[in-house]
Picture 1: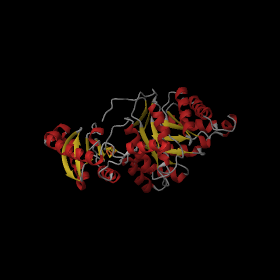
Picture 2: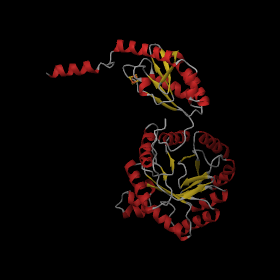
Picture 3: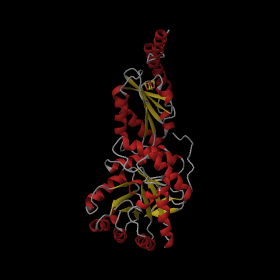
Picture 4: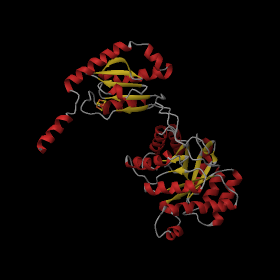
Amino acid sequence: MDAGVTIPRRETKQIFVGKVAVGGGAPVTVQSMTTTKTADVEGTLQQIYALAAAGCDIVRCTCNELEAAEGLAHIVPRSPIPVIADIHHQYKMALAALDAGVHGLRLNPGNIRKPDHIKAVASEAKDRGVPIRIGVNGGSLDPELYEKYGGRVTPEAMVESALSEIAYFDEVGFDLVKISVKASNVPLMVEAYRQLAEATDYPLHLGVTEAGPLPEGIVKATAGIGALLLEGIGDTIRYSLTADPVEEARAGKVLLEALGLRERTGVDLIACPSCGRAEVDVIAVANAARDAFADREIPLQIAVMGCVVNGPGEARDADLGIAAGRHRGHLFVKGKNVAVVPEDEMVETLVEWAEFISEHGAEAALARVDTEKAAREAEKDRLALLDEQGDDANASGQKVELIRQRGE
Ligand code: SF4
């Protein structure tokens, strides 16, 4: 379903990480980071392929030792997506990664602080046309800035760290830059990015650092990244989860699709939360539907609804849906009933119809069945359920009455 609402995006400069554009109106991209030793070429490539399949557009690998840089020399030419080298402490590793042919660097200004080192890396990157992310991190902020701002990590301190790095880059005429100001504290991170967005027009890489394990990590990262994206801030994103990095790529892709910032390739599954009216185990059916559609590239919105009393109406904007009646499922397309199937065939029927609609369109799907007959069957179940359960299946009215009586 296209709600027709688009989010205006902040205007920024554009850079290219390999062939992938970042900023300047390019689609927001998803990043992740490998967890293998970079020297393990085959293991790292395997993870990169899995990440790319899960929706990752750009991957980062640590370059913390010479063996890692040598690994990158083999990984970069075989990677299906651009590779960025993550550099901390040792500027020489940045130079080695550039020799390895990486498509981008990430430098942490909190731990590579000598101006000569920063400028040496920027000059070399400039000669090769390779972009650098200035990756400020609340946890490893430049100690001088930490002191200057009263022994605290503040949004102002993080922004100042990024701007000082840009000043060094300016000295050597380097401007292939994107910036991040990550923190594990969500309000701090959001405010730092807001201030940064005011202060520069470089593209921004969003992230809540050390967000943690699932599901808390996803919630925290989504709160921060989602809030900023809805304000039009952010050009590339990374979920930093304590989980298989494939989960990071999936989460990033789902968020961008949910915000309408990325074209959907798979199903948008919606499902009711279930209630006293439910005629099936909605959680089980929704999970089975999610698994059934997981590897299918069907960009439709599909609804799983627990009852035919309210389901078809509430999900009438979905391309396709199913609502439970009495031991059977009522299938509907764009709010119109099309078929009745036994309860245990609900998911496979959804898949069949989704494939048909994806290939031939909803009109063709509606044309092949007797929608009036299906609507009559649905109405029969709806009335029977209303008769059994009444309008108030959760008996809320009765409970309220009881509460009032006691209070008198
Ligand atoms: S009323 Fe029906 S569709 Fe709505 S939450 Fe309850 S079971 Fe689901």
